[in-house]
Amino acid sequence: MLVTALEPESRAGGVRVHVDGKPYGTVAPADVAELRLEVGDALDDARLAALVRRAEVFAAYVVALHVLRSRALPAPEIARRLVRKGHAREAAETAVGALVAAGLIDDAEFARHYARTRARRKGFGPGRLVRDLRRFGIAEREAEAAVREALASEGLAPGALAREAAARKLKGLAGLDRTARERRLRAYLLRRGFARADVIEAVREALAK
Image (tube, rainbow, N blue to C red):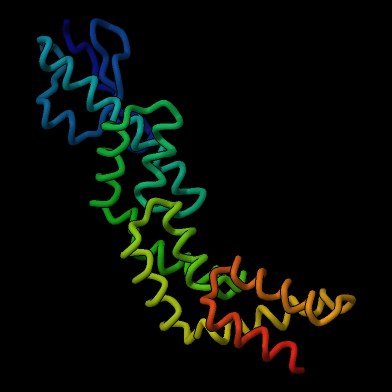
């Protein structure tokens, strides 16, 4: 089998490799250099297999770039999405690794940004923030550290967030008796990820007003 053309492709700067007159796969320019592909080369089984693997990785890389244009996501979540879209796990993980190396994916920064914005906009507590980050594939220790750093950098104390959330929620419970309001407030704050001690204090303060 012969390489009959190496055609630049606008999609993420790839190179389409033609074999025996037909498109065989698109790879990164670095792959062309590493595989020493030139027009007129005869490809043995090993080089063909390597070309296929590189093309699979590049296809996953292009899809990952498209995902990142929509929103920032951590590496484990992007890899999961690539696999769901039909890419082989090895190709997905290799493509994601290349994006991490290029600085286009930063799990720690994603986690801190997620924690900051959800704490401010949604009024979520540390427990909820950590759980959400774990669902994105962030390791528990890294998620907890990111939440601590994010809240500290914004001057957001969990107790204060809990009191603010309780005050907002209480406005919608005006028609209930005290026992019902207390029960609803406590359950609401616990679901939002606040520690039990902060919940007790926030509920006590809200109902005292």
